[in-house]
Length: 387
Length: 125
Image (cartoon, rainbow over all chains, first blue to last red; front, side, top):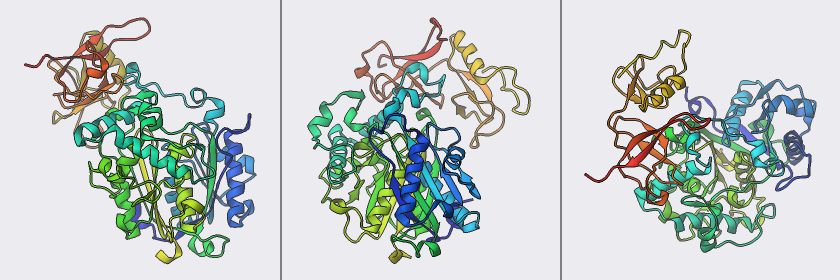
């Protein structure tokens, strides 16, 4: 069944958002510590308390049973919980599942939480790769090599250049310099990106997302209750998801992601088109990821993404506001970045983004990616004016 | 073309991976095909949704794929209709390019690592 045919546009809203500590967190802080920080801060953001929470959603690469762990930690006995795990897009799907649960009356106030200590604990310690007898013998540097294969194919097929990809990293950095919470504090040039250490050709370390700690939480509730709370609600107008593969060897076309399907579902439910969207927040695990999603979500024709971004179009002051927080490339990337994509979309709709604010922002798209372009999940959000 | 894969309802006497590896030991890159001859890789206990009927094993005898370079990790599209991750050897990694025709060679077992398929460029005919 297609969720977009059964969920009701605008029936729920994201009402609270907050990051946990970010960057490199204090020694000994756990994944659940960070989730709990995020939950308490997000509840304070909207004026609710733990006593209001009756739905718990969580995902983390470092916790096998994150909703259970979080409930114990917070002292919650929720009516409903869900720890759907599909990588970095999990949280967009949690939004869809939370909307379904709220619409069905299974819960009324849901928290969606994430935490990661991959930087302080060491990435090798926290993210062991599953052995795959059909790929591991070739020693791909995963996930980077998978994205590098997609980038190579896009360059071969459409003439996309490394310079164009580098401009995506530069645009992200320019946005990050407008975000006080961003990890990166120094400017970046195309030349620096190209001259950086090659991780997996054609991607250098500056084409790759950061490796930071971090976490956070969202609070969701019904549209009716949302209107009574402290901050302007970000109403859920549309959702969609698509799982196209798990391993990169099984991605049917390396230049077309499942975002083409998940985005179409979300637009249909929202009754909106790409040109109706004010701000675009997409999961930028690598520079090529931004480019693929701009194409697959309808902001650029297929194959034209490199040329689309090459004149500063997605940098501050450009034609399209993309990844205004600085993205996974320059703001924060604890491993499953999707939650932060949603946070920035909500903050833009509220008008809270200071120097990086899109004036009069009414609509936002938040697109999540998981695995090696494997799972795609899209959420379209809007202010009360869009209902 | 050899054995039929076991019915998924029955207990599996050997795993798809073990059967695949047994073919590699014999010097063959093996894959599965469904009733319509549609190729499938990696090997599975049952066919995915867009395939039809029981799976049979097949082995390649004549192979001419194309590669995509990235640190000498390549996705090889086989003439037989499936794709796998592999490595193109015999030439420097940065000379491996998309569209190049290559031919399979089974690397023999070495130490703890069993045999696995790699590819060499085929001289332009």
